[in-house]
Structure formats: structure tokens, C-alpha cells
Length: 107
Length: 107
DNA sequence: TCATAAATTGTAAATAATCTACAATTGCAA
DNA sequence: TTGCAATTGTAGATTATTTACAATTTATGA
Image (cartoon, rainbow over all chains, first blue to last red):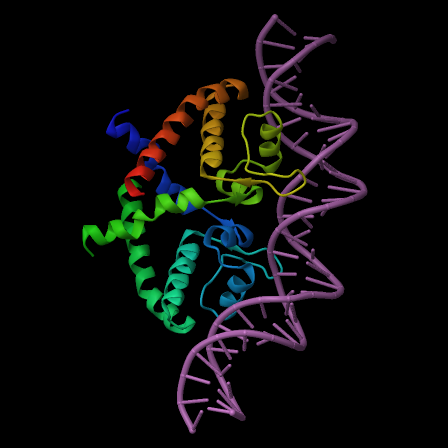
């Protein structure tokens, strides 16, 4: 398989990540963060979800999940929750920026 | 931001795709394939899910979802379900192969 | 050490989402 | 119009998630 064909197989993935939505149970499975803790972080406005109406199940996108993973890393390193959230904010801006550039290239 | 930092932001994504699991409702939202149809395809063994015990909620990984999207495309082009499944099988092998290569590079 | 706040965890009762199974409907080709 | 492929509908049971209130654990400064 040529280099080009490989790329074709995976060039779709940014589009995929863009459309991705995941429930809280699966996020927990992916990140190893308990659902209880995810809800707690959301209550504290450390993270956000896509959920529109209250009472409905929470939905998260790629960016949300990425943020959780970064916060988890920093907490493991010894940061407090608030400090981790602050530090991650900047990094998230870079990630969003990178994704935007890639989407522009592909779009 | 340098090219290298961009890559660092996203080099994680193959690892992410590897861990990704999604419920049937979200798969439906991502692919625009009704849940009823997803279950039908699974009944017919056109696609598979990760679900271990019956009665529990279905879980799908990246490969499963990718396959559904490819089948959907072919059906829209006029293929029958069985013909689409057959054609997609080969393509899925290439995709799995590509992902394996990437994982080896990263691991 | 003790008080206080931060962070996490537990759980009951209600609701949302999904499950299976049986059946009906639609579309198309012989 | 018959037969098969493909899809869709839905009832009743089950699984997963929701909110809300409370308890527990952990870190920190006086």
C-alpha cells in the first residue's frame, strides 16, 4: 500500500474526531476517571459537556475528553484541581488552534 | 507554535482511537445511521460490537464505526447490504493494517 | 493538633436510553 | 404477484444515568 493510500485511510480521522460524541460511561472507560468524579468536575465548572437539557444524559466531545485527560495528568503530578484547570486552559487553546488549522487544510 | 508542538498535541490521537468506545446512541449520532438499523446489521453479522454479555448495552470501537460509515457510503451508491459488506471487508483489512503500523511506530 | 476548606465518594429514587423479541412494512426483481 | 432483502415499529423488561443530599477523606495554615 502506498504512502498516499495510507493517508487516505486516516485523513478522515480529523473529520471523525470533529463529529465524535461520547456518553459519560464510555468517557470513564476511556480515561479511567470515575463517572462520579467527572460529574463533580462539571459541577465545579472545571470541565463542560455538550448536554443541552438538564436531566438528559451528558455528552462529551473530543475536546472535553482531552481536557479531562490533561487535568488528570496534572493532578497525578501533584497539582490541585483548580491549578490543573488553570494550566490546562492554555494548552486547550493551542489544541483547538491546531485542530482548526487542520480542519481548514482539509475543508 | 512550532510544527513539532503541533504534532505533540495530536500524536496522542492514535492512542485515543485505540481506547475509544462508544454506545449505540452516539454511534447513531456520529454516523447518521438509525440505532434500529445498526442492530439489524449486527443481527445479520454484517458488523460486530464489543459487547460481551447479552442484555448489556452495545459498545463499539473505532474500527466498528469506520466500517459502518463505509457500508453506508456503498449502500448510498447503490450496493446491496451484502455486497457492500463484502467490499468493505477488504478495505477494513487495509485500515487495520495501517493502524497497526502506526501503533508500532508510536509504541 | 485542630479547624477549615478542598476534593472525593456513597447512594436512593426518578428518569433516560437501550435491550430483546415478535411483527409489520417497504422496495425491488423474477 | 410472489418472494426475498431490507428496514421499521413497538411493548415490556432491563441497564445506565440523572439529581440531590450527605458523608468521608485529604491537604493546609493557624
